[in-house]
Each structure stands twice: as structure tokens, then as C-alpha cells.
Image (cartoon, rainbow, N blue to C red; front, side, top):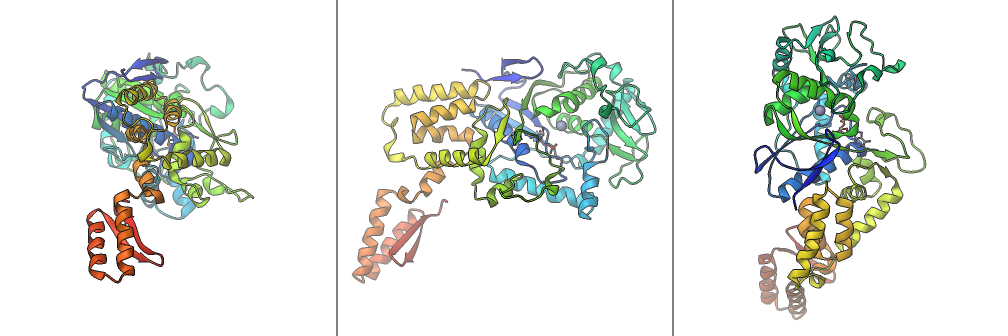
Length: 464
Ligand code: AMP
Ligand code: ZN
């Protein structure tokens, strides 16, 4: 069965056909590193990780790029307000560069704990300003830009296809009062900044043909994706909030600069909701205590006693294109569900010894995964089969460390090791130290650390 994915551009599920098989090229908008990632952000990165693992499972060689936004993302996606990095620097009395490095490291610590694989390339926006200037120059040559006191703008009225991803009706767009932009000199409400000018208090600044300034957020993703994946690549991902502005603008500026299609498949992850509402990264530091543990980051979940992989498993309860409500009750349910998986017995596998039944079960799970990443269905099927080996095979996609965690269960010590431990205990009782040492060496050779506890020999697999 081929892998099919839902393409936001066409609003249809389509068979995935990459440009240059076996290579599959994937770009995901990365974190803006001005604060810790909240668990909503992390849901999107779990979805993207499942996608990359699924692509690899189906035989592709994945080249995955995820940027680090360390400049130019304003407090509103439509370029209003202040640069988030600069605001955070003022809040924490640090330089924006220090803020960026600190929260980038915190981000990767979180993704590592969630078994989110690191993309092949993780470029920083501040390291790619020359490439951004290069694209803006091409847009200028092609007649798509104008300059005001605020910066270099992209003129959306010059692009007939502007808004095709979100199917925007430009005459109806952004007429509400709070969306009116501060820059009076802008020609059309949907025009956006490619390069900010005349911001003397901004700390991160670069020279450009238009004057000293800094890049807009949208141009960053065009520059870094095309640099590492080419003018046209296979899949671009992000959260649904990016459809109307950020991805719309990425498409406009990339296609008007290169005159090539930018991306073949657009995939968007739905939001994680907290108490039915949105989570906000900029408000993480303003939260106040109440009776219940306030969960907003992965660390707060861990501090409340949850396993990071239980959060990953919790994410599998909903399809990536559906909203998911976070609650501690749902986390408790995910924790028990995952514990049941970790207590599976490799020695009493209902599908072992029956290759036909195994192949049929595998086919059903695979069909669920290949149907636009039907992970909730796949997990439901895996739970109903209760087969250790089937779970382990699909763990290449699920990333739940199943084999390792099952082996870590106290009763998971292989029979041969248990017998050696018993013989060593007897040898020690009989003060046969030579034999005790010999068995100890045998256990070490089998990959165990051997200790002498109050009740006798203890063993721990070195693999864990
Ligand atoms: P940011 O670091 O704010 O640029 O966001 C990083 C990623 O998280 C982007 O792909 C966003 O679309 C996504 N995102 C933001 N809020 C949520 C949420 N509540 N649930 C899921 N994804 C989100
Ligand atoms: Zn982006």
C-alpha cells in the first residue's frame, strides 16, 4: 500500500510521490527560541517526527531541515509589535544571542526526551542573512518589492497567486480593527516585511543594500529551506496557525523569486488545547500558581511525575489533523496505557509462531499508518493484538523505546541469567568464591552489571 498524506494545498489526501526517490525532502518550521517550548509546540514536533520516521519506514532516505528562528519573529505573525527575541532579552536582562542559545539548548533537551529525532540540518536564521538578502534582491529585480520608512515590503498585489494555500479572499482579509497594521505606508494590508529598516534600538542588525536592519521572519524559512533542499522540495510542515500568514508568505516570496513551484505537499498539525483554549509561549513566564500543578512545558510535566514518553503516547490519542485537549486525566490514562505496553511479555507473544497471522496484523497496522498517518488507529490495533514483536516493529515509527523498557521490567531477566544468579547465590552461601567469581564473569560477558545486594546477587543490563 502506498503512503498517502493530506495536502493542505489541494485539500485532499494524495499518494506521496517524491521528486527524487529514494530521497524525501522535508522542511519543518522550527522554534522561535525566546522561551521554552510549550507542550502544544511539542505536539507539532511529535507529529513531524512521526512523519519523518514513517517516510523512512516506507523506504525513503529522509533529508529533514528544521530552522531555528533567532531573529525577526515579531509579537504578531503579521509583522506588528516587537521582535520576540529582543523582548525576551529585556525581560531576562541578557543579550538576544544569549537568549537564543539558551532556549535552543532547552528545546533540543525537550525533543531528545520525547525521542524526537534530530533533523539532518538545523540552521539558525542569524547564520543565513546573506541568503535572505539574496532572495530579496531577486524579488526586487523581478519587481515584487517596495521600500518604505519601515522596511522592504513584498507587494502582494503583484502576485496573482497570493493566498492560494489558505484560499484567502484578499478583499475580505484583515479588515478588523486589531489587524490594521501600524505602518501607514504599506500599500496593501496583506503586504509583509522582507527586511526591517530604521529600528535603532534593535540589537541584532546587519548591513543590506537597503540599509542596516534585520530580516522578516517569513523570508528566513524560504532562505533556509531552499538553501538545503533546493527551489522545489517535497514536504513542508508546521502548525495550522501558519497557513494564513507565514506559509502563505513563504510561498509568495519563494515562487516569485525562483519562478518554480516551492513545495509539493503541505502538511499542518492541529493545535493542542488547554482547558479548551490556546496555549501561549509568551505567557509561560506570567503564569500564577493554583492548587493543581500548572503544566505548560515538558519540564513541568516531568516535575509532576510524568514520563516524557507518556506525553508522546498521549499525542497518539488524536489524529494530527484533529485538535487535542490536554488534561491531567488524559495524561494519567496515557500513562497507564503505556505501562500496559511496557508490561508486554516477549515470551508469550500471541502472534509468535504464526507468520501468516503476524503478516496480516502487520498489514492492517501499516494500512492505518499509511492512510495519512492514522496513528490513533494503528495504536488501537496494536493494543488489540497485544504482540510484543509487532509493537517493536512499529516502534520505529512510534518511538516509545518499547524493547528497552520491556527489558527493564523486573521479570524481564532471561531464564539463563536468572539461573546463573541462583547458582552464584548458592556458591556464595557455600563460600565457593572461585565459582562465584566465575559466574560473575559469565554474567558480565552476557552484558550485565553484577552487584552484591543484601539479598544476594543483583544484575542490571548494561544496555539500559
Ligand atoms: P513557535 O516556536 O511559536 O514558532 O512555534 C513552533 C511550532 O509550534 C509551530 O509549528 C507552531 O505552528 C506550533 N504551535 C504553536 N502553538 C501550538 C499548539 N497549541 N498546538 C500545536 N502546535 C502549536
Ligand atoms: Zn517557517
